[in-house]
Image 1 (spheres, rainbow, N blue to C red):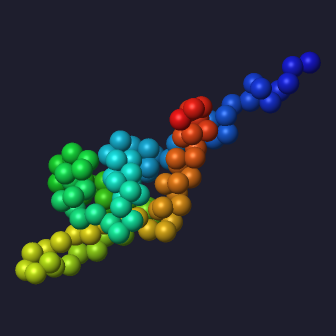
Image 2: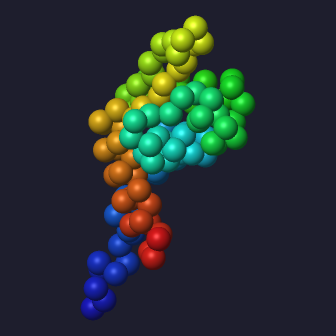
Image 3: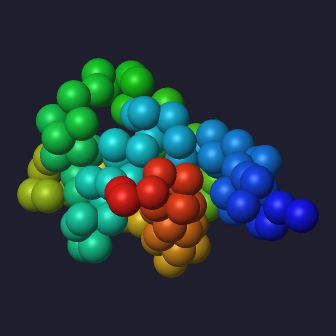
Amino acid sequence: MADSSSSAPPRGASAPLPPLIHGRGRLLVLAQLAAHPGGRTFTQLRDAVGLTDGTLSVHLGKLEAGGMVEIRKDFEGKKPRTLVRLTAAGRGRFAAYVVELKDLIPGL
């Protein structure tokens, strides 16, 4: 009798990766924010991930609505500035996503 555990799909294989995180643009944004705990300005994010202002705004809106990021607008002198940071929940969900990817892709 064969071991049934060897034919079982990897953990999480039956459920798709979370679309809020797994989309290319949002994944790039979250990776940048995870690497910079103090947050990134909108322009720093835009330049780092290579998205247009409009596309980045849409992705940030979805991440904010999902509780992944917080967006704070203030002024630096007389110049407006938008600061984006991962929330504690966002950091935890991103870390869990990375673990799930490692489970799906052996040797990652």
